[in-house]
Image (cartoon, rainbow, N blue to C red; front, side, top):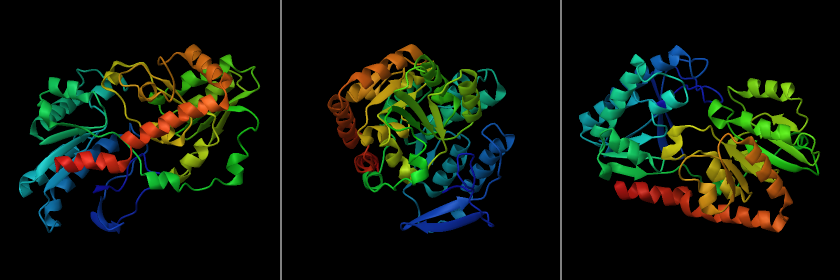
Length: 365
């Protein structure tokens, strides 16, 4: 079950009833009607959390067979209340799945004070979720340390990274000619594809681009959209960058086709203590699977690019190190860059194939 609207959707789901079910690939999805809102900071988003949680708790009226397990996913901690109510009614096991550690992420990245009443409520809900769930899963490999410090028993933890459907990535859609034509030919392409938010630290990449602005052999291609897009374009203008190309986001099934146009993939982060628990972005497994070398600007724990020997890892927010990594990779032979990409692809198949991840979850069931 999912809400009919979030700010991350490409297009909203229009439903008339409070609950609307739809069968997709033999799986019954239930859409719960919620309010539309403008962005992640819109107050109606918080109202939606309450609406969604309440309506989840009332789902027992529409569920015929008793569920063995109820799984609720964060970051909306309020949803846990509805899921717990539903699990208690059916006497089902409850799994709390943590994608971002709230409210820590709101304090670290959102600038909220730990004394803020909203943060205190979120903290109370977080501790409750750790204590009253049968299993706590997370895509963050080192999150167990934080969770233990907030009341969770260690044996409840299950590491479930973000991953991919191998068949879906292999059967990628072709790009239209107008897309490919936007990428300059006969240049060394440093590419990024994904969301353009504050956490993605794209402004640091643009500072590296400034250092290479006079090198006509290198181009930076940024594919995606998000709250920071306008600011990034303004930064390109103010820095007089002539080596940066912005391209609109593409459907998920075209992402692998986009990456194949890159020589190097880039992914970066801010230097925040919250990353001491690790990260699990959706794009990193897809980068690794692509067979392209990766520059990873990251100072937290568990650097997959370094572990897989799939590229070059540099400190977060260090634009000089990013520039040096680009020059180093450009100076390699295509064979040596290909070896790094091959390392990443093999690593991704071992750790991020949904079939392997599903086995871990199945073992808990």
